[in-house]
Amino acid sequence: MPTPETSGETDFGFERVPLEEKPRRVRRVFDSVASRYDLMNDLMSGGIHRLWKAEMIRRLNPRPGQLLLDVAGGTGDIAERFVATAGTEAIVCDVNQAMVETGRDRAIDRGRLREIAWVCGDAEALPVASRSVDAVTIAFGLRNVARMDAALAEMRRVLKPGGRFLCLEFSPVCSPLLAPIYDLYSFSVLPRIGAAVTGDREAYQYLVESIRRFPDRSELARHMEAAGFEQVTVRSLSGGIAALHSGWRL
Image 1 (spheres, rainbow, N blue to C red):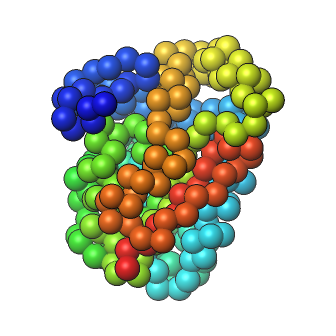
Image 2: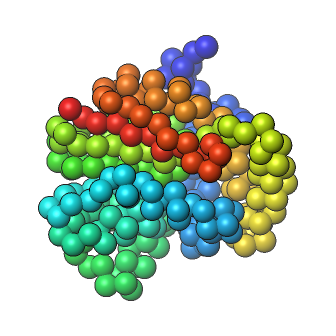
Image 3: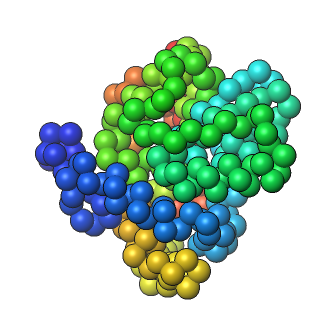
């Protein structure tokens, strides 16, 4: 099967689109939902996404003096958890200006004036120096890039030797009993919630479809290894609804 890089196309939900068109479509999706994105995450997951993100930070184990780059960082909830450890700093990088502005305004309201920097940038061409950060995270954002392999290579590029990469992403459900319930909820309930809360059913229809088109746990691990990450491991969360992938630049 041709890769997106060789075919000139990629997935936008269940639709195939030219590579250069996906970033524009993704930006429109998140422009539409930026102001209520965090609320929707709570409603869609029943708040479980907070536990998944807490586990990501627990495994990352922030230490004073470390600098985190959170790619596709949206409104900054991962960065906020990271800088809760005194002496740490974070950079939030997101391609969507509306998401960056929403997150920055909320961080200022919480008094996070120095610990978190905000950058609008593309995961496939990160505006960050090589070997400059101690850790890189991406939560529920890798499936939105047009060239996943390019994004993985970029995230390795900016890591210092000895730095760690963590990716939190939805994945195929492991349990055969849970799978049909999850599908019913995803395709029938979530878009309706999205329409009611944000007024944009199509945005959440895309998000549901993008989860189904994303590589499974083993395939993503192989892509990470091909990008140069070492000691790659995977941990399933909540029956496989999400997975936490870990890799190192050694």
